[in-house]
Amino acid sequence: MDVDASKNPFKGKTEKRRVSEYPVRFSPAWVVGNHKEAPGYNMELIDRIRLGVKKSDWKELIQRIGHTEKELEGLLPASISSMQKKKVYGKETSERIYELAKLYGLGYEVFDTKEDFKGWLMSPSKAFGGKCPFDLLDSSFGFELVEQEIIRIQYNVYS
Image (cartoon, rainbow, N blue to C red; front, side):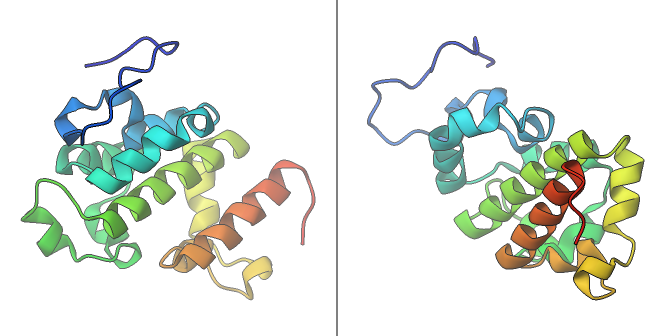
């Protein structure tokens, strides 16, 4: 189910929504391609996190960002083997998935190509004491530091 961008399909609904009721519009993969639009839908994204990301949405995200589950395993609060057993992930895992989506959306905007962004993520950086930005993504604080550095690059303010 996809909806018109000008309409909120859940406006006025107060009952607990099932994950399957959500339009594709708010999936993690959608956030990657629409990260600028996503802040306007923060409440919907918070609801999606609370209800949990579906396994199919996770698979779509990893395909879109060009990683494997194994590469991303260390960034998630759940093991890949436990994730494979679930259809919908818990709040903490879902939040991390959305953090990844948001970060990759910003990175794809700032860097010329997806490959350039991925290369930057995997390369040691002076800004992070010689560590790769990707290695910092296992914590929310690390996400914040990497996001701030991408914004500095966007505005040509290097640290």
